[in-house]
Amino acid sequence: MVILSIYIVSKSGGLIYHYDQNPPKVEVEKVYSYPLPFKLEVQNKKVIVTFGEQDAVRVGHAVLAINGVACNGLTLSDGKDIMELLNDPTQYPLNVKFGRPPISTNDKLFLASMFYPLFAIACQLSPEHGSSGIQVLEADTFRMHCFQTLTGVKFLVLADPKQTGVENLLRKIYELYADYALKNPFYSLEMPIRCELFEMNLQASLEQMEKGGLPGT
Image (cartoon, rainbow, N blue to C red; front, side, top):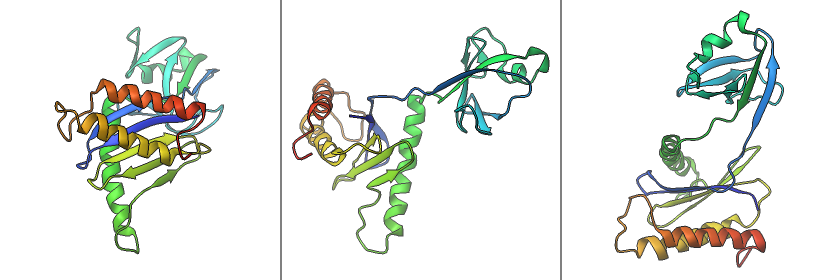
């Protein structure tokens, strides 16, 4: 089973739950001479590759470390400015590690809020009235499956493109949400889900799917 992440988005577009099952770790480390074969820019307090792809380094990857010293935002952990170091020819050769930047909680909140209008646009673009919106969004490395309830709550599962049975998993997550979140007298609608029973049963469902599939898969 290759389930990457699970998100639950409220009817108003807020992220109320997220779970990372198998976060991919993509890192490339190599000694480079001056100049680097990539164009780098500062984005969201990270040094990001914006042009040029080689050695498995892709656009969107971030500088994670230089000469074994980890990056901390726009500086290394020893205090050196990353962009100044990379733009100084006298510092080369440099051992630079590139990789997919980690997604912070704030990033996930932003992405969830962006999905809400995209879903609404998809409904409006449909030539038929009453479109169900985005159900599957496919990329080369993952497939995002979406299930929206009648109340507007959206359940998202990011999985490997070859993963089967995700539709049943989405409905199972919905059942768990109804049983352990909505029936919890201490839970308020639109608020983040912090329920131990929900977490336990979600993990059990993922393990069941990994072993033999959920009923109906």
